[in-house]
Length: 277
View (cartoon, rainbow, N blue to C red):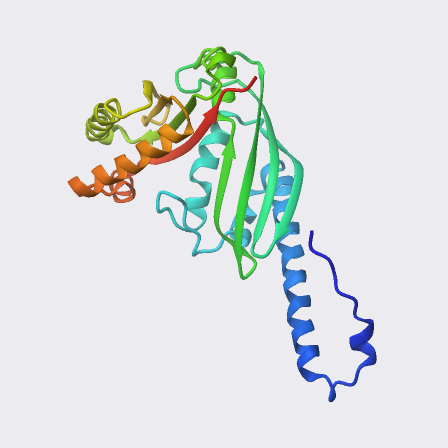
């Protein structure tokens, strides 16, 4: 926790006698104020922009220099996944369970609740209430967000929707981890993307610790194709080793994922999950 230093000694001291100490304190005080401003900005983001849908104010929060993990820039890059989520779950609301700020980062433990009113990845609406918890990490520069990452329980969410069986991870296999990617692919890029996915699937199936993988596909109303891949690994160590070998293979064949996704206009959301008790 960040604590505020006492001003008493500095207020009583002579400026002429302690110029260096006063300068150091002022710099620290400005830093602390900035941290609290960043924290307040994220609270306003959840309560006003998200829950009250005041998204016209998002450009006040997001820097033009913002970059997402697919190379998207500025407000469009920040809103890419959020727009799709709000279209699919229009009654979604977020609750901040806890929040902390330190340096240029704000950390949020969040909960989202929504109703399954629209088709999602091929799953027909169940009209059930869905709940999803996660952690958001927001990085600020000059009072605006320049990057962020939201890690959520995608495995549990897909199970609630009915896309994955509820017993996908039994207690006896508790060490197993699930590497889950969701891709939103323009229709014209599906053939090339599928070829790449098939190459990757063939490669990882030869690696130690691989158990199984599945691909789920659904055409969205805007004509794009939503594709979810789920790879099951023996344990986290097997997955970490597989990631390293995949990167080596990419270097060998000269494949750059970020450039590939950007060229084809593909959006990606990734998560690694482990079965609970």
